[in-house]
Length: 110
Image 1 (tube, one colour):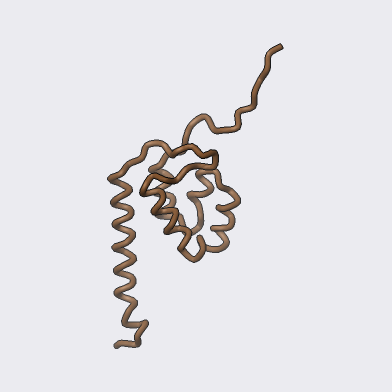
Image 2: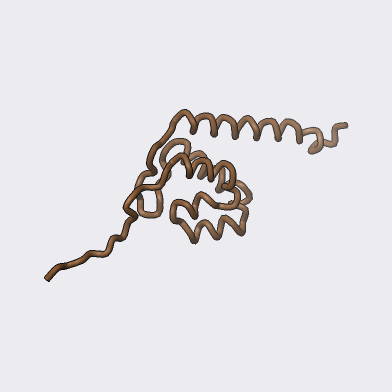
């Protein structure tokens, strides 16, 4: 008798570049988590705005350092270190500019 086994993992890994760009542009809503198979965590991130951005930043850093895995523990495919360094550097520059421009309003400096 022929025995058929059910496949429990996807037949291909998720693309790293797509996950990184989804995290960078729509990560505050947890869209990258839905893409990589983490549907429950994606819903939680959607309703909490990614833990007010903290969870998004942690996911972004882990994607940039290629330590992010999909739901099945499979490494993401096609890691692009140059794109990851641009994304991480750009994110921190934007955060620094936002912090510097908001400092006068924080301390009531006119």
